[in-house]
Image (cartoon, rainbow, N blue to C red; front, side):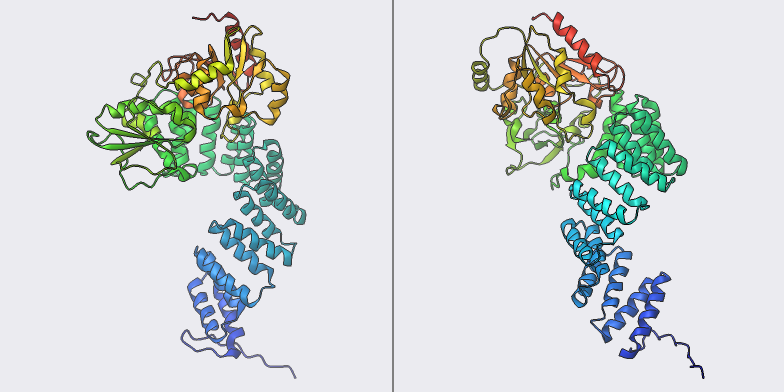
Length: 571
């Protein structure tokens, strides 16, 4: 005789559960959950816990409901409670790790993933997620190793290949990144994000033409992807096709009207063309980009943008980006003071000595030290907007910074008597700069432009490992390294030169602000402040610009510098 199975009656919403009904109630809750009825599923999981508070499957699923609802703190609490009841389930630790990762608690997330993998080392998704947490912690090698473990378990894991490529890209390893991104695309030809990152890898390799093709492939798969339009604009800008670049940024903005990166990149394209009025307005979008968030100053005092009178007010001017930007835009202190304001200038410690005595500054404070009272504030790079600066009204003094006299006397003795014309050189900038790959030059190449008849001085404090053999081989280049304790020392050394030849970095700004003849070597498409197709620059009267005629062509730039140095006559 066959057993008779009676259909399970659904539980009534207010019905009290008995321990015997818990298994059926849990199955019913799972069914509701799978149908997307999260509030009803949550209510039933909670009813189960009233009967069996230690029912870890319900605790786990409440964590999942919270995750799906974007309530990550609640998810962490539920998963932690489930782990208290049953710590041997690897998925619980993995889910806890994911919730912690979403909250930005990355070290804790990695620890949770490690516990999951200790219980089950063959969890490819967990290895992939762990790689993501490590990547955000800037622990690139560990992240790549985690992605590799995921790929070893699941060779066709397109997301892991993509994530590995993205990690390598962020670490400036473009060639290796391309190999991983190519694999992701081979596994999933319509992987739009992989096409976009592949384009970024080509841009990092200074191949904007190849990058453009990648972005257009991405848009062929999804023409409504704002990031692809924005990055396409970047590739067009790198090809000096600026009108097309602006149109691409506009397409990105049309698809996402609150897209700060697209507005910011459009602003740089406009500024580069000399359209300062529109460029400054859009440049304020920089404050909404992810990269700028750590630099936002949450002052209770209002931001000044030239909209209210300053007479009798105390205004704080503060830096926001690199030292070169600080050196370039501190000149506005004089214009602010002319409005009747008491000017407080906050400066990074390395610039303190060279900024001392800057015209228009009443009080100077070192960044990180307590600030005096003030009424309004303005970031330095918002001052051109506040003053409605255009090409005709750029405040362009022959020099506005001065080397401290005692520092200059000390360095005059240290350098010794002049034997020949002197050239100071800077061949590389900060390797962490977003586009350092376009501006820095290997020293071995740079020295080819230096005539034997000149005394040569390195104005750099840091020398990259790859450049150290060349510096040792060319002993006529005098390098002071750690003797340059701050920019006051560098200013003194610049002041003792006849010409400073530099790539686009902070020392170029310092030399130009001192009024020294400064020759700046620029990539095919330079930073916006250098404009296009001119040898001079309205920001600095003493500057001469040497531009790449085509992308990556430093050899012709260095050849022109060598010829001009050979023909140079001291004033």
